Amino acid sequence: MRSLGALRAFLFTVVATSLASMATAQAYAQSKPPADKIGRIGPGQATSGCIGSASSPVCSTETLLACFARAEPALCAKVGADMRPAGREAGAVEYWIERVSEIRAEDITEDLRELEWFKAGYTLVELRRRGCAASGCTDESWEDMQVYLRPRGASWEIVAWRGDLEQESAPEVPENFRPASRPQ
Image (cartoon, rainbow, N blue to C red; front, side):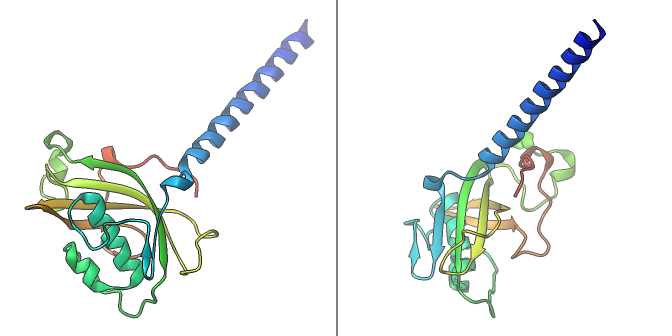
């Protein structure tokens, strides 16, 4: 009888471990963008048709990415971002927009009220991106990026962004807008 109990405990452990491994593998697979959702911006080419436009939060974000990839400050200026990529060589960026969220009044807690970049009516664009040489990005790791935008008439202006490369004093992302952690 005792070995039957040990066998059941062993089988339970094996099944539980297998299920946990499958859940981890599924979470990792979901963190990788589907190939048809990946945008690419490089010197003289882009999958987006709205580079240079500030007509929507996504177009403004893609224009910011083009500024980084092409090392063209004029593109950043079109969306109100103060970026001077001087000394940087033009390259390419691949990106995947995960979520576009409007910031609502109920999202603003007491500790967020004074933040310039987190106001009701603003939009948060969350994406994953990787920068690379113009020839390709296959071996580069994906990084998270968040872009905060405000409406300005019929266009959208970038208030702040957060990513590993461009902005040293990036704002902290409020808890309810933080992406779930995912493997690289």
